[in-house]
Length: 113
Image 1 (cartoon, rainbow, N blue to C red):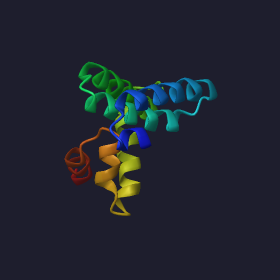
Image 2: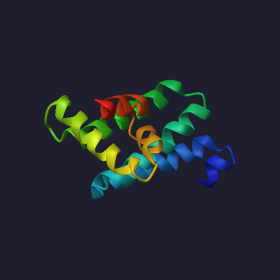
Image 3: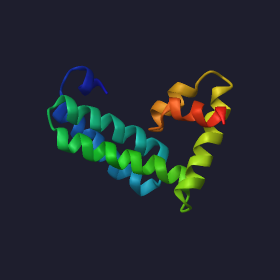
Image 4: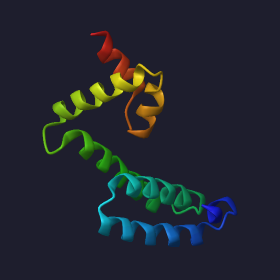
């Protein structure tokens, strides 16, 4: 991410796009999501907001797929809550919610039921 730090966003986007192509061929979903997130940041900084939103949308869909595993949204919510409960024990619930496009307030409300 040296290009990002040096504000060479076009170069960073180029390299991150290549990395995504290679990662898609290897099937490394977790790393692909990190690269997609980084590329979205570069697009945002470069003023290419539609592309940044597109990458963030892909990222959100990928996170949702991790939880749903081709089942209903209700089961996806149960899985998300169960995973949140695990990390909340280590006081990392907020960070978990942030990374997974979840609401920490909603998770706490569910927990209070």
